[in-house]
Length: 266
Length: 266
Figure 1 (cartoon, rainbow over the protein chains, first blue to last red):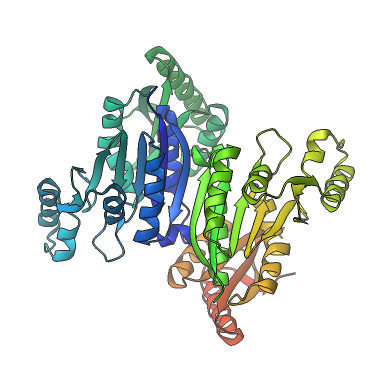
Figure 2 (figure 1 turned 180 degrees about the vertical axis):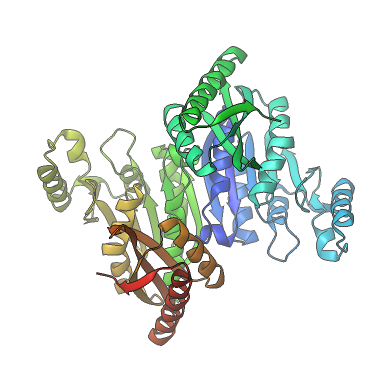
């Protein structure tokens, strides 16, 4: 049976030294777990290209199905994650034309100058496919090495999440046999996000293999508007759909009790 | 020069699979960083005693000064962190009489029965010193292996933090040359914790090597009471004291602007 083993590497001094809480690890852990991958660990390391490549090499030696890294893709001198990937995999960094176009396009739209530091973001390990970043300038990298896929994403949570949901996860579901996944979004008007958080927490305590997120969408006649996103998986389509329906039902009931009005998401 | 290298291992499926956000990693990372230790990484692993002992062995091979583990000290079958420490260090688990007294005392006070599962919590690696747990039943373990100290703490944040601040950190400061550390606590009346959080966040953005925590202390004539704890370090006493004074001043100013009344902590 092919490996379903997965590892997450979250890179950056700010995470290791506790200046920020590592929400990327929780996000990626949860998404991989729901896909049915066998996620064994998360490793956070300081910005040290030697240390990162050593750990990457050890993990590659286990021949897992997936290694996901976050952080260290930006233009500054300490953003060296892809250099560590290159060292660990023996795939030298090369200017990737598609990645360069992504950086150029972002820079043109934002009115940035295409400096040497910004071109650096288009250097990917040889053979990598660049991952377009819809909310930032640094492209990600999808690299297949033997049986392992090494995916590198930026550390900014909104960039990482947009790239994961828009491109990475759909592609994983194409190439790896995962659990059947169903998503649903609905809208609630009249409940502030902080109150909704209590309902979400209660539901998550009951349903173990579900991912729930609330997105504030501004106000409607002075009442807060929230989109509630639910993701769940099952061993088949029916099981996944039933689970999403059940969780959505519980959420709606709790939100109605707080005075919320349920609508379709737009 | 002796090693100042430190590693944190946060253990448990719930962390790796993203059911909880890993606040212990941030807490320990921050405290070690402020002490001036060279914290290189945090490794979270699922509850697999073989996997945990493999990683522990690799880390011990680097001969760091400190390895801190959290989680897996409880009475249930999947709480096997000390078994992993025993395997990795070659120090077999033995019933520790002092640890047993700690468990017995906790059980007597709480009216629990001293079952076999609860006695299990008193088995420590041979040569370990038990760490008393003032807010829970599982003792911790302090084990010196060559030049490395392996410290094992429970995963419940309030237990881990109480043991760290009450026993572990003072002991580390006795045996390892750390930076000079100064703490200060003051009280503010009339500012809810959620509003104080914004001030704390602002101050932390300016002062990089400081740890700040707020502790709600109930109400005083219907106004919320908060104790604000500040910890900072410097290369000497004066530097640390100046930093704490500066940070405390900024916090008080921000809290007064929100209508808070500053008092001495009790």
